[in-house]
Length: 179
Image (spheres, rainbow, N blue to C red):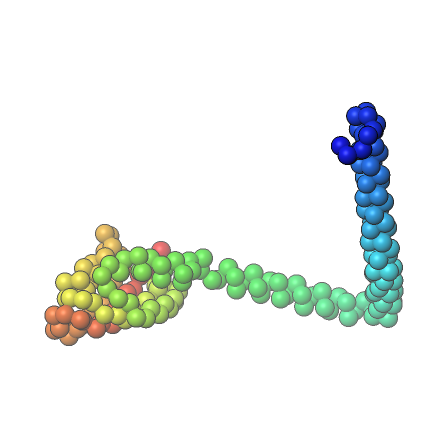
């Protein structure tokens, strides 16, 4: 605006007026977009209300047609199923196979494990481990780590496996009694 011959105060008033008009136009478009958004959601709202009413009418009609003995029989079956599920879930041990496998993997050291299978009975947990040890000494150290400091686990390592000195392929069984 410096190319006009208007005084500075007039230039300032014109700039303020232009900014005000731009702001008014911006607010107008925002309000129009808000009205369009609300208008586009209105049919979905009407559809949801009609569907809800339809389903509530179906439930009311179902409740009128179904006799109470059928409902009571279904409720009895559900309560028996819940009792059975509670019994089964109580019979399962809280120890997971994941914690058993992670504890074995954390003890492996230089030994390469190829397979781990875990079986659980009422009295013990049996773990079958297969792998390759670099040396016989590494395999014996792995066996000692599996027994633990309290030697509560029984580690069955066949003597024939110890005949090899290097690259020892092994399969051993760890039996941990449940507490």
